[in-house]
Length: 301
Ligand code: GDP
Ligand code: MG
Ligand code: K
Image 1 (cartoon, rainbow, N blue to C red):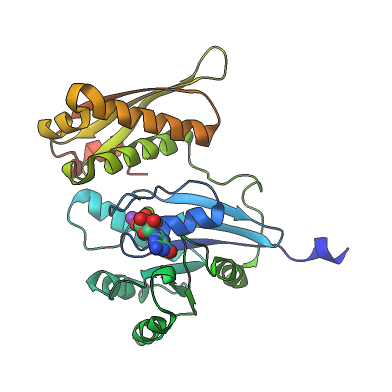
Image 2 (image 1 turned 45 degrees about the vertical axis):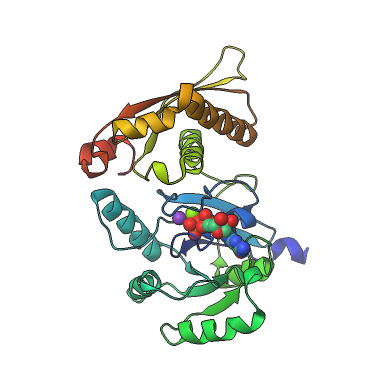
């Protein structure tokens, strides 16, 4: 019948934007699973996270790129290069901005990068749940002067306003193509990566400003128990200073216990298995600027 012969579309989409504009929230809303790690702190998205959204009409593969900003360390450099390479590889770029924030140097920097690539770009104005509808027009005018966006789509990623139209618009940009991933697959990241990110998310949430982004989580071992059900995870949290180690351990080990419990629950929810999680903390000075360490952490291909 006609319907099954209708062409299937597919393509790759990169989401860029300043920290905290809602990129991960949007990705999670569309895909409907907790894949990208959400946080109100900048730069929690460190690697390319692929999320796959499949419908009868087509398949959209999202790359949640790290932030594009002026790099300040080797890790920062690496993150920017990942983000920039991604822009050239994809079929469409979503440039997400926050309707409640003025356009800033960070947005201008991204626009300058976007001008260097041929990939079409949608401007996605997020958090419209927080502004009056009349406030949108000046924002649209402001951005339209700087770049010839293929489309401009106001949304609320949190409440799901207009996100269905955004998905339709994205599919409209895709060409006929294969189903790259099975329809029930939502991410191609190894379980290890997802587990590490969930642990890192808990650390950032629970320690607030006291522990900077200079932490990394390395899954040292991940194995199934003899019953085939329990997943045993042994993970190290790397910090740069002894004082940070103290904060992460907390009074009588309370902080580390809390991090472990919350992370375990999330990992169990995501993987559907019983999880045994053991965490410990290692101090490694200045790891962000050491190439070899970065390679060990899997930041280089
Ligand atoms: P990212 O750094 O761009 O990935 O931003 P996140 O997705 O981590 O979101 C940053 C913060 O903005 C979180 O606290 C989100 O809950 C919040 N947020 C994201 N989208 C919306 C939205 O549409 N409306 C509102 N009110 N808040 C949002
Ligand atoms: Mg994010
Ligand atoms: K981010």
